[in-house]
Image (cartoon, rainbow, N blue to C red; front, top):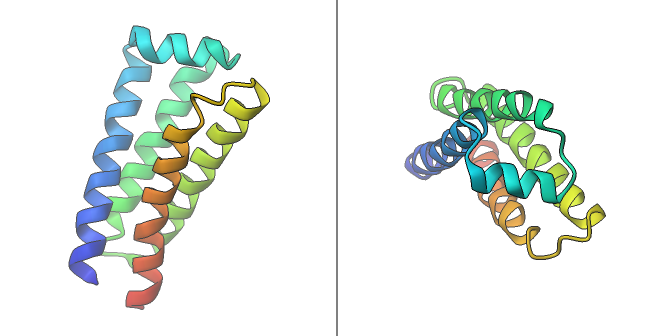
Length: 116
């Protein structure tokens, strides 16, 4: 299970870092998607910071499992917030991506708990 945790932690971290980068450089697709669900531009750096911290926590969890579990829970909550934001904005087409990412982020949490 340790190897599965490491692989998933790295995969989720790469996704988070890619998403954070897009927010920080204000990628057109990301900014358009955020505007569609009424997320203010001023939130982009804060959201990117949360994603970066989540990635760091998941990677640190390879050596300090409770930290990885906590970071994974935080990432799941982050994406649940994204799902709620899409639903409130009546953007049903945008909700599946954060839903898949929330499920993907839940996997390291479950593996981390099972390995303890």
